[in-house]
Structure formats: C-alpha cells, structure tokens
Image: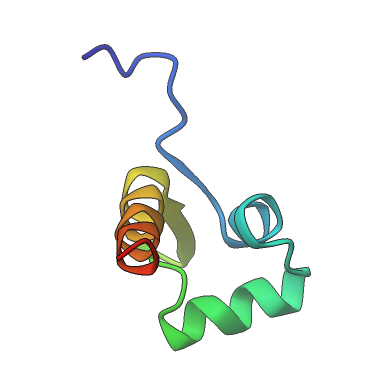
Length: 65
C-alpha cells in the first residue's frame, strides 16, 4: 500500500474536531483520558490516524453486535 499521500498523524484538536466534533479543550481532555490515542514526540502530542480509525472500527463492530 502506498502511504505517500496519506496523512499519518494530526494534532489533537484537529482529530477531536474531525472525528468527534469536540472543541480544542474537549479534544485535549479526551486525549488525556485515553479516549483519543496519542503519541508523544518530544513535547509534541500527535494522534496517529490509523490507530484512531482502528479504534473507531472496533467500537462500530461492538455496537453492531
């Protein structure tokens, strides 16, 4: 699979807004609770898109059963 044009990470506020409709503060609160998966690179906190989408896929599968 070619990932050259795929966004692999995004900021916490971007992910919270895009996937959950959260505000900036709500996004950071969700990330600190572990509701949004994050990785730290130095002081930078990023959301790995594939991990977030996999988490949402698992939640959808549970909801559908």
